[in-house]
Image 1 (cartoon, one colour):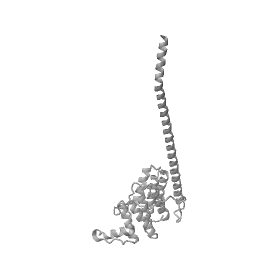
Image 2 (tube, rainbow, N blue to C red):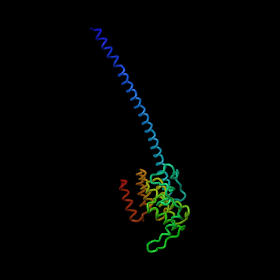
Image 3 (cartoon, rainbow, N blue to C red):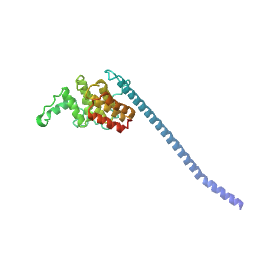
Image 4 (cartoon, helix red, strand yellow):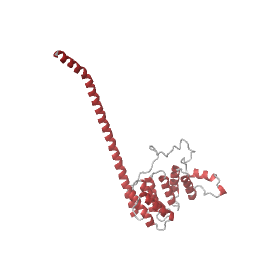
Length: 263
C-alpha cells in the first residue's frame, strides 16, 4: 500500500514539473523585460537631464549678456559676450511656419518689400489718402508694420529684416528693430525677441521706442523663466526713463504684479 502511495505522489510531482518550469521561464522573461524598460527609462532621464542643463547654461549666458549690456550704459558697439544662434526656418520648423512654395499667394507668404509695397500701393485707401512710395524708408516700414498688425509674423520678420538692411541709417531703424522683436515675441520666441529689445535699449537708448523696448525685454525674460531678472528690468524702466508715458508706467506696474516682484 505504501509503495502505491509513493508511486502516486512521484507521478504527480513529475506531472507538475513542466508547469513549474514554464512559470519560472515566464517569470524570468518578465524580469528581463522590466530590467530592459528600466534601462531605457534611465537613458531617457539622463538625456532629459542633459537637455535641462544645456538650456540652463544658455539662459545663464543670456542673462550675463543682459547684465553686460546694461553695465555698458547703452554704449554703441557693445556686443553680447555669447552671441545667440541665428533663428532658422528649415528642418524642425515651428508649428506656425508654412511652406511658401505650396501656396505663394497665401496671406503671409514671404515676399520682398517691393512686391508687397507695390500691391499695397495698387489698393486704394478710404478717402484716397496718399500712401508712402514703395522703396522709401517710410513706405517699407509701413508695409512691414501692416504685416505685423495682420498677424503675418513670418512675413513681418522678413520685411523688418529687409528694412534694417536697406535703411540701416534711417531714423525708423529702432522702430523696425522693435517690430522685429514683436514678430518673435508674438510667436513665443522669447530669446530672439529679448535680443532685439535689448539692442534697442542699448544702441538707441534715447529713442522713443526705448522705454517700451525695456518693458518688453522684461516680459521676454519672464517668458524665458528668468523672473528675478525680469523684475530687475521692470525696475530699470522708470529709473532710466522717468518721463515714460503713463501707459508704459501702468504696463510696468501690471507686469510687476504678474511676476510677483518684490515691492
